[in-house]
Image 1 (cartoon, rainbow, N blue to C red):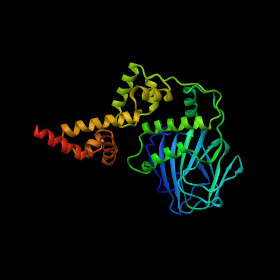
Image 2 (image 1 turned 90 degrees about the horizontal axis):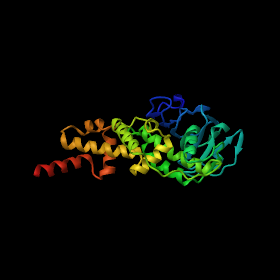
Image 3 (image 1 turned 120 degrees about the vertical axis):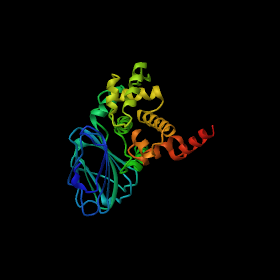
Amino acid sequence: MDKKASPKAVKTAQTSPEVPFTTFIQLDGKCSVPSQFRTPGTFTITRLQSPAGLPDRITKSSPVPALLVSISLKSLPSSSYQVWTSDKLIPTSIVHPFLSNVIDFDSQPRCWAGRAFDYVHYSVPRNGLDDIAEDLGFGRVSNYRLAVLEDDLVVAQITRSILPFLGRRDHFSVLALDQFSLILGAHLLQKYGVLQKTARPSNGGLAPWQKRRASEILHENMHGRIRLSDVARECGLSVSHFARSFKTSFGISTHQWLNQHRIEHTKQLMSQTTKSLIDIAVQSGFNDQAAFTHTFHQLVVVSPGRWRRHYTTRHSRG
């Protein structure tokens, strides 16, 4: 993404061109989106807000074969919204919140919005979709159905689930983004892909040695910056196959597993040391104390401070 689009752009979890990341761009009326809007060659989530709309249409492109998935978060009248693919204007109506567009970047999508807008855009590389298709037993997927202002409940729901995290300091880890891209990719493949055949994937879990190896690697990388593909490679599996087998074996995703073990580690530190909560948070792989508190409360139902006080009181009486 062109950083000149806005001085307020906030990128998270980007350490190399191949790593997925999120961006939140809030235009202030003085800045504009470049007419050639080029996305990175990796899975990305971009939230783009503008108080004034676009003065002219923009062309969106990707350096690799990919799908563009766009979800509006606010309404636009039909007179203030236009979409082109392959230089052809697509008929549109009123844009209601949480309607989705799914467009192949190969068709050189262009868009224009004449009023204030708020969108979430996903850039989904085709190579990742191909890996999922192979793992699920589908034939080669050469085309994806064009969808404009589609009422896609799945895309709408997963977008609602990530909105609170876009632009926050306690951003997604790359492991969580890898997992998210698999969920979105599987849905896009099955709903919009022109499939050659359908096969029921194996429901088997990981072999004992694979479970041990996966657990070891995740323990060693509690910060969560390891890629899902790295763990899958150590287990001799494709990313999609590994993610599905891991969930079969453990009952949860790798990201959820990692969060549970982070919380167990924080409990040990809170009960056995006098370290501050911020030090415990950082040592256990959280970006800051806010992220730690949010995850702890989500899994344990009480705040870390309250848990620590209760533990200390209970054991001092014993």
